[in-house]
Image (cartoon, rainbow, N blue to C red; front, top):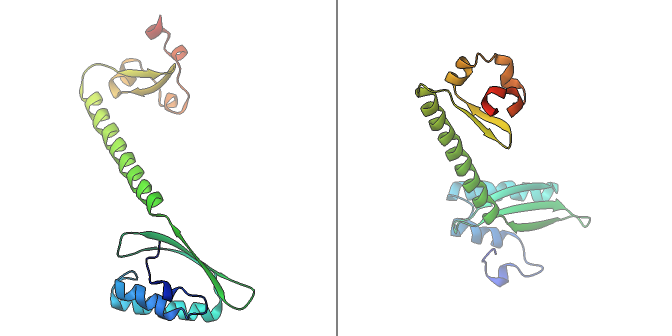
Length: 157
């Protein structure tokens, strides 16, 4: 997952070469950002701070990095590949945005025509345009109530 040489991950090896390798590869950002990250990490090692961060490597892999102080005076660091999760979040956000944009377009069209429109789904009102609102002389209170067929007997008889 981390795609680093085995000798950098050997037990008993210092951590600096591991992060230097990642910095040189571009995983920690530009050189100035990488240096700042390593300095901050060094300070955190000596303080035994517990922290979780997300980091995107140069190869596109997104990792959740958890640093937890252990009971022997060091830190335990775990790396979790969250690339697929983050990509799905991006896809879901794009789908949500497209859905909202589509709803806005549909509402504009529905409000631009002369006919009143009421849409029902599973016996409940899911949409009505301003013309239906005005033609049926509906009050603003109806916007905050659950709407069912029973509220519109003339439409379902």
